[in-house]
Length: 449
Image (cartoon, rainbow, N blue to C red):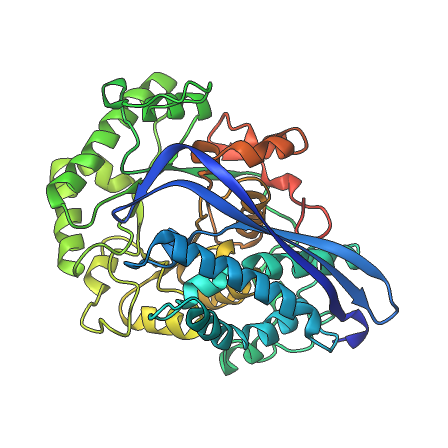
């Protein structure tokens, strides 16, 4: 432990970048056709006065992070304001510290800041914790990025007792006394990782389903995507409140995959199921899985895990227990996971897996990854339709957590524009031909790219 490695934030600037979608994305009964990137640049300084900059970027994601009857323009405005105010607060932290410590201190301001913004905008409902985390995630990433750059190290090599002033018991609980994040992260990124391709609820499976072809040279149907990118992992968005549609959707996707994979000579591929918390109870999920198993047993066998099938509000629904579902497939907590307390509650209610998301913050993700590994939980990394820098950030997180086997990346499907400035620098991350991304290149200083 050495305070000589500590830094303070001397400057931080937040900006916004609109990104159009090439095709609409439907999930959880909602449709998204564009996004806004929150981009943050910071400058940090060490005790000797050396300064360097760092960067962070993440989609604002208000439709996902703040489900509500409020107009999307209102939640978007609130989250943009939150991002601006958090960024402005960061240089006001007076002390030198490790990024984890700096962000832990800054996060203590989130609740009050959210309440202030809600009052300012006349919002008469609570500003969700998830929306707060998403809004603050770019500054979090930027500080970790800058810290690594200042020490001429990859950020994942600055997580040991040599750099951190406190062990993990400070951020989690006494079970983690004497432990640091280097024990739960890899010193080199995995060389390659399978890419999970999203099949949204509106996405055409065959040419008969196509209603709007962007004609931009990219694949349109599921079959075309599988052939073009050599896909072996498909994430299926389901309704959660339309049993017959859900069953047929999996069957329809499996029919396409069986045909195309046979043409490719591929004998093994996988599915994950995402209900986006729309199932009323565990019974729906159980009945659904049993029906899929009866109708298309091979498709059932290909299911790796089920993601957040029921309400994200765990405290409001203690009656929902997912233990029986988890006996069939790993059940992964996503929207409900906002801190360590929610992880412990999710475990009590039957969740056996964790979906890490860089949009919840680098610091939070690292701590939850450590906890999930100690508890022997299934781990995956999901993205928030992350393009460009934000996808690289998400992928670097996945590549550094030992037990994560695949990475989701659907920005290339829906909003590939921001990828263009990266594709020539890191082609293995964006030119997908064998269903994998070449994460081995994410080994530079800072966040790795």
